[in-house]
Length: 550
Ligand code: GLC
Image (cartoon, rainbow, N blue to C red; front, side):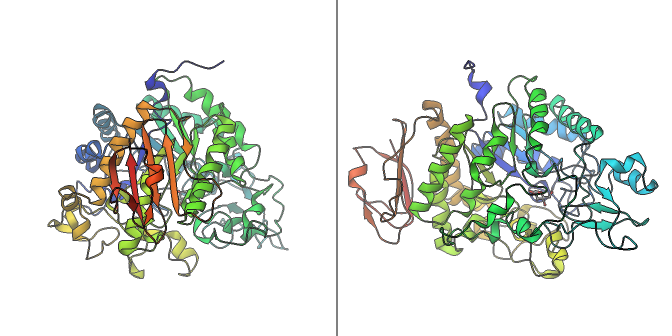
């Protein structure tokens, strides 16, 4: 039976979500780190941007060993970011501007500072409090070898030793012990956290490492543990690899901790809870499963609502590749009735301008890709600063914060370059972010031209484009459904650099991803341009240009 939905019930399906990394958004108390009051202070900016929702990265009490994804208490606000009253004020401020609020939940692991872990550490071997984690005896005569050969996503063994000689599992940093999701306390606590924030008025959740919660409880060695981890790394994936060779992500099938079948039962429980709230609450899974059709299982009607489409973030800037990815995603989501999601960047990836080559060309391409992504049916996710066209910042080694940098002994610089505090005012101290003497991550010296106040008043700036695009995409999505979609260019054609499609009568998109100007006369049908990036003379669309017509 199809359910009748009022517009408010389906607000999330084609919504635009703006990811706020609170530490780097806006600092209201001049301690060098952003905070909740800083977000409230910029509510007008968010409203003017035209987004439907914000997704807040973690703001929970945390030693910040992994930027807050090491949570010491999932039902509190870290004093550095404010308190629960600030959170309530943030919700009401954003809701009064028609902006929904989605918060991150981090169910796979906690911080070593979490009460449960402190209790487990303080308790003797065999104590029930240890069963909430994966705490095991080691191997070797004196147990001095880890229980198995699993490795951490951040480098090194996935096991660290406790003072009494037992070992605990951490798929990420050694400060992030993994929870044992077969334990009823863990399941109950997860639901309690969701309820806590739902009752405070949040509109949804972004579920961190959603596909990692269940582990092979026999703890058997894996034949290639490093390949499992590499398969998770967006930056290691080679989209141009020889397609006749096996996909390196194949290794994820039937693996010991990512994407195990048992994990779905957790989300069925979560969905039952979410469905008791009205209007509809949403959830989005971080689950880069393989193959992509398997990722869709997380967005089945009785599980979470969406899955991030990370494949789009590794798709080469080529018309055939973009079209192929988009069609695959649309095919896959239609299997489960979920909306597609389009993601260009987040706090774990390179910034999109940087990924596309940096400089003027990287920027031009990022604008084209955004105009494609924002026009496709489904939801879009924007990482703060993407709307300013920021590039990854150079971070001096001495200032680096990412545990990846430390755990790989500096071999992998990590993700700090994309996490630098936002530039608000060209003339302000630290570009108006903070009056602190030192920021938690330094900003580049040459960001004057990309500051919000400079871009706001400049036609054709990145920010102006995003504002127009976000407002216009909402109008388009009000006029047409997700089903209103058709390619104007052949799927699978490799000789064309044009991506073109329609959204019913509401929108035609034509983008030129090639190096040459191309006549697009045959695709125009007398329609008028209402948004563009690059150059269009009425017939020829220049390289790295895109037009929206109606
Ligand atoms: C997710 C987060 C990332 C974090 C990791 C461990 O992938 O997006 O930032 O480091 O989980 O929590």
